[in-house]
Length: 108
Length: 108
DNA sequence: AATAGTACCATGCAATACAAAGTACCTGTT
DNA sequence: AACAGGTACTTTGTATTGCATGGTACTATT
Image (cartoon, protein in one colour):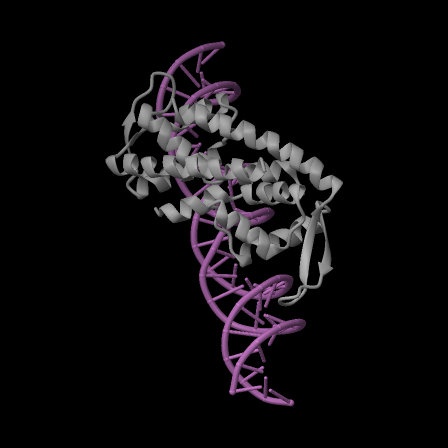
């Protein structure tokens, strides 16, 4: 039994929620999202976020546009779609219910 | 993209936490735990909880004892161990930090 | 041209929730 | 005693996801 592993498991599923939430506030590219999440103590790495962004895009929740950068290769800015906003709304409810349930159960 | 699937992913890792928390309050057998979690709107099924309980037992976080029932087959009552209590304490901290981080990120 | 930094992408593995099917025990009815 | 129904525990296989790892490509600086 490994605490780090359990932490990783707890993170499962919430990244999708966090990323949609962040992109609903402001468009961003992958490295930017990683830094934002890192600042909030939510560790994410490239190998996690790139496939996730691609999946969300393929499902129509996100779109993207390329933008040149003055300090490196071009960046892929992701934007949330209307479908993404709708889904985010449902995820918000789900998250609230989940935390409520967990708190009830674990605080006896 | 499926909401039910995402909900299931969000549940990942927290069941371990919930079960340890419930067993720290009172010993219980699997069907009893399923009912308790169901009442708290945390759906769990047999195929999920039995392997989980076995895993927690194998890792020394739980122990169990058999008890005869007057209305069916014998029941396997699980009890939390000291190691389980220590682990639960760490999971509690992890959960609090995680929800705090998610709320900060998603509430912009 | 060589290096360092930034950004994106692909592959393979490990862990877990769940569906589904199966085993076993007990009680009550016929 | 045989059967049906309910309760409880177990096993197997699948899908999904987070992550480690390695790779590609572009830019700027030296």
